[in-house]
Length: 438
Image 1 (cartoon, helix red, strand yellow):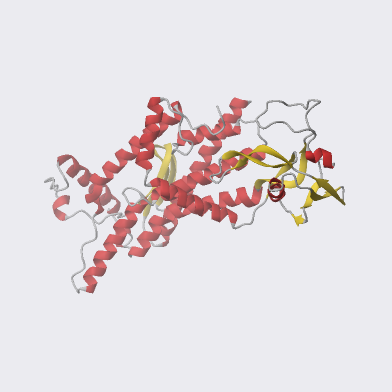
Image 2 (cartoon, one colour):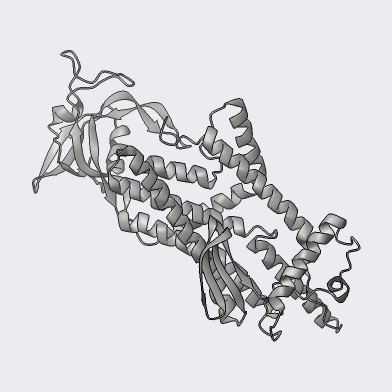
């Protein structure tokens, strides 16, 4: 059953990523068609076509390698210069190899212009329309992340320690003790001595109304050896009990969130943990906070990948915050699905993981390098700046920016992405992130 659950988790993540990619491409497709650009293909995946169907002028389909997608728009770049179209490969693009790549890119682009009236091409659109088309994909990922985090926070809820008491310790055991049962000489816990019972709902502590267990705990921890009155609701009737927290060493969260040992007031009770639905604003807030965190890490990506490779080669434990490949994300999804946790916990984690992956797709695609969407946005803005400059100084309109000249740069970027992706896949296979122990 565990193996089946693991496979189900991986499949669910793959399906979720496929939906994310499909929506990303729809984010490009819809405004492109809205602005009149002829779209020849809408494809999910790369490689050989598994299935396709033509609807109108656009072919929709799936390809064999589900690691991305694309739409094919007419005239992503201006037509080839006359000398290039005639076969001039004099190496101006940076040598024979790169010059050939530039010409091949121009030839492929020219094929999308064949038979067109010249008015339904991407490069002739106003700058703002080109920017909207290219930002449409990443924005769809951001919107999907917001929806997923909203489902997690406001639909399912966040696990929260409530004011309902789950259990009361009969005695006080030393911090860090492996002892599980009370001995005859162990002192009774202050909670048991005060008469607190499982199921009691804490209403107030020392005259202060509390709405969460954390609020009650804060008052108790700050009041060692001080008598406190605790009002509880027991079966619909409020009762006032007297409890004196004892001074004990306990693990509490430090300023950086890591647990630390401190001497605090202790009574010996635990809270019932329930899913508490959060305000609708919490989902979008989480998405934007994650966006800022990912953006702060993204510019360090080459260094983080290098550190991950070093950890893998040297056998060091991998940083839990290191970047993941699709393989690593699938592995985590499978491990969570195979755990013995309640189904709602597993669903919440998987939805949150998909939300985080969509945030990563959003930020990654905004990197201002071709072939990423951010690179196309920069090209469009540069074209608009050249036109504005010419208009300002009453010069003839410049030729459209020919981004095929950047094919050598694009080639280097693609190779770098392939290398980093390969390193992360190897690390996820041989030195995976351990979030669940192991």
